[in-house]
Image: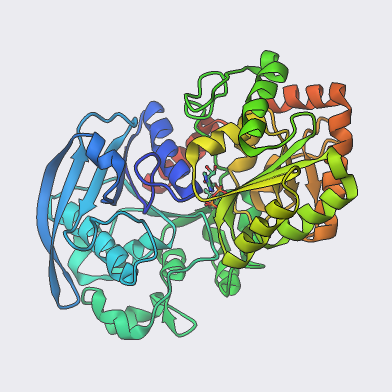
Length: 472
Ligand SMILES: Nc1ncnc2c1ncn2[C@@H]1O[C@H](COP(=O)(O)OP(=O)(O)O[C@H]2O[C@H](CO)[C@@H](O)[C@H](O)[C@H]2O)[C@@H](O)[C@H]1O
């Protein structure tokens, strides 16, 4: 069975967040299970493309509105990622360094989708499944089934996976000309709330859509930035499949980004040594519990609450607690965190930016990982943390609810709270501080967490069953 995954990100080629982790791992595990899964993504001018060999397997042109655009399909030659990787390169449009936030982003992702379809159409390929990820690829199902240009592809099943339902990629009807010719009566399939909405269109047109955790599937019909009613009426097409983690990349006993490796049996000592290096680097004490945050500093992740919650916790617990924050995002939050670091240099430090190696060291060296998310479709950080013996402190939502059991419950191992509030975060920090003092219990929870199985095998199988049900 041949599956094409279409995505804007893929680890280690180009990553901003969890989408990259999933698209960089799921196809590998699907191939190990006997599928032929490949990834197709835009070309970015980044280290990976310079350090690896690519061959051009196709060149062609496509029409983007009135512009004729030349494109190339480049294939990575060794399959070193465990799957075939194809990059779509368009001089002047898809050959830049960053993934998002260019003023002509709409043209970029529209061209990406059109070039993909032109490539498989004109080269006579017929994949068994086209699997699209997030709104950047959301117009593909509509174009395959309803544009006169791609009629040859109209029988191929499409799956659409929603990693983040808050972002829709919507734009105005005045840009309809970017799409190839369509019958006017079909335009309703593109529309939501008076605009062209790629996420909504994908949900309407795909054969099946999935969310990255079962809980998030239900939450979308309660909160999805205006698409609630759509998710409600299309619910029979939806399914929730929990993400896995790439246990080859995320393994504390082999992780090349860690100074000290450890396994479950040696976690006490191994984590302490990593913590020591981390604390030395950030001027924090090794004897206090280290509570970390890693992620985008946006309201979706509850990052706006961090400054107040950290300050209040430091005032409450004094020299009994340390915080370390790694992330980048909204400027008011960044500024408040910087101020906090100056006010409490012995209790709190902040690294503003993106640093993959530091993230690995934090998962290994921290005692607790705080995730006060308002919305969390799945969340990978808590799973990485648990694999590295770090207790997650999470708000009970989406995938956090599906993966973390509070240590107060039978066989629990994490700390869970209900409300997105400074009060709830502070109560959870207090629970963490007390738990840290009970070293026997900490050891027990660490062992329990590190024995959990969040590997991709199970979830990859669920996707395969879904594909099979559509093909048959
Ligand atoms: N400053 C920084 N430096 C280094 N590394 C950083 C970093 N900020 C984030 N990361 C890394 O980026 C990834 C973030 O994963 P999340 O699951 O939080 O993703 P995100 O919200 O982007 O994705 C969406 O898609 C994923 C995948 O489906 C869902 O799990 C999630 O809920 C949904 O919001 C992790 O690997 C984390 O370590």
